[in-house]
Image (cartoon, rainbow, N blue to C red; front, top):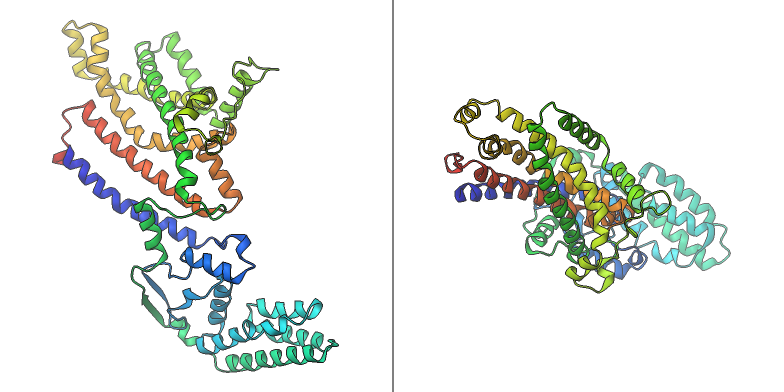
Length: 457
């Protein structure tokens, strides 16, 4: 058993690595600058935070690109400038000429931008932000005509000098394109000094990074919420198994009798009902004072981080607020478990060894609980590996419905604020939970049937 678990844990490592690669790759396609908004209008502050986040490093250990791009493109900041420069290279292929032209519309344009305003300033900004090289001549012509309207001779000369420099560099670039380089592959090796290695090392060492929105470490943001979500799911899982398994046995023992038919119909109704509808009905039934029973006073638990309490004190003070979320998750899970347990029992009691046990004169209770029950647990154990992640995902919806301060609310706010660092960290946490659930299911297999010998696999 121990050897098998060690082997499974070793197999889980590459699985998590693949998930981390996919997660990190998705994060690279997010069209949002991770630098906080308040820093983006201050170049020095932007560069400081961007370097702190590692944005000046390559994405991965190696880069497969074309010969037109240099191996230092990742050092260009801000990210908008990097994307603009990459767009120019994609259209022309001549890195040296593109670099000269790009410098003329960035650094060389700054003095002219500082002495103009209004329509002239707007025209220069349009030249600065243009990413289509074929549109550049028309934009330069517009900027030239507007510069002619300037009354200040010094400003007019400075703008015309800037535009002349841009035209010269543009002519030099378009006159010597090297698009053939775009067809020649190039492989650049960067070593461990890259963003993925830094991101993955942070997860392994317990420092997965900072929130893009708040700037706080992700562990500070997510640890209390993760504890709340795990507690909520743990309570629902325990109650679901304590209720669902015996209920499934009872239904099997009352096969095709009125209790079995009534319970099966009710459980199928619960199973078919979306969990958010079930939660809404429980709110109306148990919490509303006007049209419901009003048994639960309020639903919203206070935020843990703002309460100033320890986790244990917070749970005790908000214990009543757990009732509706736990009840919603439990009822939905009980429906699945009871129906599955009923089917498992009915399949087992048709086996020959059950008929033999009855022929020996064993009582019906002994036949069910000693012989049929353990073997019928295999389907329940099988679904546990996927059941825990499923109920975990369902709890995120329930937390949002009940305004519960767990991972669900955090996920919603992260989506609303484009805080992708939080979202991708949550993906890794859920992946780890899924693998842990699979390992627990393997241990339960050995408990349910001692004949299982994993070392022989």
